[in-house]
Length: 166
Image 1 (spheres, rainbow, N blue to C red):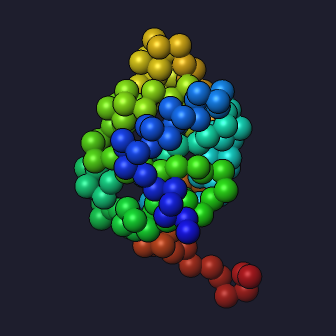
Image 2: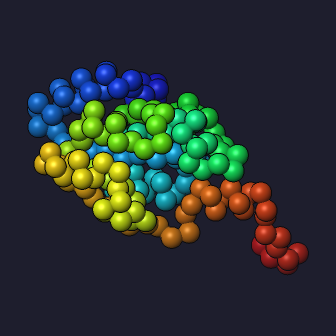
């Protein structure tokens, strides 16, 4: 069952500590993942390639509402977590209520923190902390044309095709 990947913080930290003792590297990323699309999947697969265990910090419904506004999230947090959990590259998911994952990063202390290329390294929340304790911050290039906001906009305001268009 995919929901076995969704963990509470204390349980997740114990799992990660055990994995680190056998030499595994923990990769962490976070996001809303409101409408999962190809850009997300490629991003998560690349993030996983930086280490052994990929942990996704998933914004709760309340934090998505604060960050995105405009009637978001489209899908509730348990649906988003379930879809992420179905991906082979995602090992664990934890849901956080804060607007930023700083407390989560500080609690889990990942070896590698990953964000999309649309973030400047100096602006990545928790990046300085991870570097300070000896971890690394990595950036995955942004894949043009893939955006949840763009998909939602297309659904709300579809572009009408000419009758002859296929």
